[in-house]
Image (cartoon, rainbow, N blue to C red; front, side):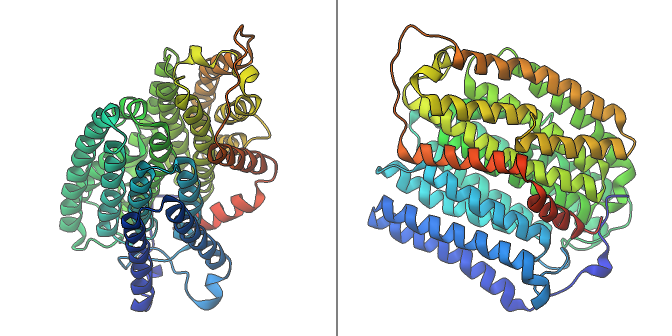
Length: 475
């Protein structure tokens, strides 16, 4: 199979679908702006929760019944396109943004700003997920990144450096993507996703697009900003960056690769193959020496990006479905881990040494973080095991045994630094100080724990949805 999108499947749906879609996103932003001016954080949280969950439920319903009413159509041919792929991520991001808002909630002005900016991020997520053109991708990615920078800036002077680094790198990525779009237009005479013929312009566009979206999805060598920004940001903002923004980068990367650059499959597969390997090794090896937990998890998330990339490299429906499942699994695992890190950060505990004896201070926190770490490793009965099994098997089925072996080696390497934290948490400690966890953090940690375990024990429904999402790309 090749990177491909069959233009014969392209369909134009009634314009009022797109009009309604944009109107809904606009209502979310203006409603949050009104609530922000009213200075009622509890109402903001309630409004955000309602809107995010309703849209997630709507996407789920449409993914099951949309075909019957003629709404689900293959990606391509329009600025906004409804497909099983877009609806899956519409549902996922709705749930994810709800949990992030709950995690960040407080009765302060900081959350009021977070709520407003997160609603903007949400509109960008939906523009990317439902994109049918490069215009939707670039606008969506910028709407995601710029409010995130503002969230970092609102965190106080300690997060300014992280905000500046994120802004500079996002500006470079946006410039690269814009330049790539110019090349693509030269090759295809359109900015809509279509099957352009092979050529120099298309090859240049592919390279620039991969570089730009490689920054967003934190694949090597475009991930040098990740550890500094993750460490410098407040933990709830880091949760947003690692569990939401990064996943949007992968959504955009998958759409662009399979919808726009089908003719470049022969040239891109070896490049992505090598990038996947380098990303895994870079993340895991540098994570070994980290003492700051957020920085360690930043390198861990880089290595996880390398695993996700394996399914994309196979360029098959099974491989893409595996990557989609792992994107969902990692989102909840990372969010659950960052909920505990946020709890520890509030108690001025940011280094690995500060986690010694955590089990004796807060058993729930230690158990949740342990399950998330086991999920990162790929231990059975967790979502991470199912995701890695699907990804590694997709490589084997497509005669990429060496890539699967390298991924397994990297998984073994990662055991060391995950185990270092787990052993520290259950070690004995002279000080028996008890730490009480805020209710909102407890709720998010518990929700992520339940989801990670359920996906590890009963992954069938989500695998089916991921398979349908991959099939809608017509690989």
